[in-house]
Length: 106
Image (cartoon, rainbow, N blue to C red):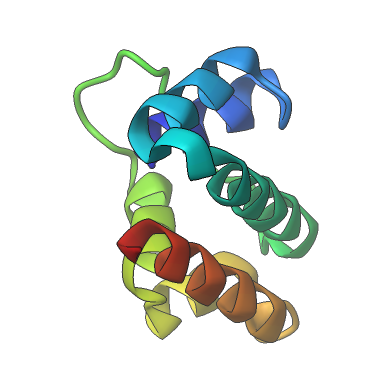
């Protein structure tokens, strides 16, 4: 998920490498996970309370913001979502994060 997030955040929502990562990770049902990741990133960009720092794809460590995004995507952490978006976009991002979490867990 982190590599998909980094590729889409740096190179755009329709990055081909991110699509290949989704295909390799999720197999034939990769489109649903890919579209949910795109929707989550779009919502995050729309509701972010500030700039989100993203490390290059080859970086071995996460930035603080990336750790918050991964926590939000993996378990819908409300503290991480509130810190990333503030109270205005919390409900939208929570819905997207829960949908993405359900797809990754399946």
